[in-house]
Length: 68
Image 1 (cartoon, one colour):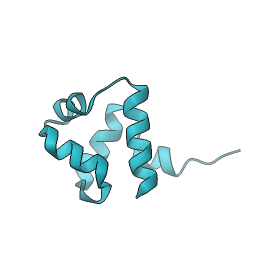
Image 2 (cartoon, helix red, strand yellow; image 1 turned 180 degrees about the vertical axis):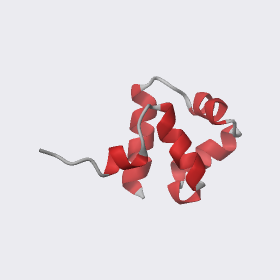
Image 3 (cartoon, one colour; image 1 turned 45 degrees about the vertical axis):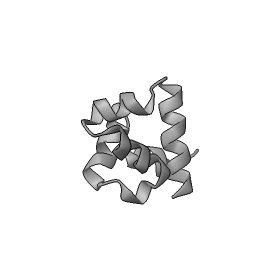
Image 4 (cartoon, helix red, strand yellow; image 1 turned 90 degrees about the horizontal axis):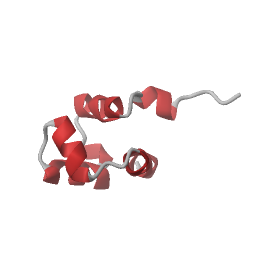
């Protein structure tokens, strides 16, 4: 889960978004999004897909990409 946590924070920082920005984009409370970044296991699967969608990618593309 630490890998997911790091990747979420990294993608958000690269996109220059705050946690409040992400909460708004996902239509959730700031407290919910803050909790999710601290504990990715708490993220509902449909919201996990939505989070990666904000960055124009998918969970699978980020974590299961083949390296050549």
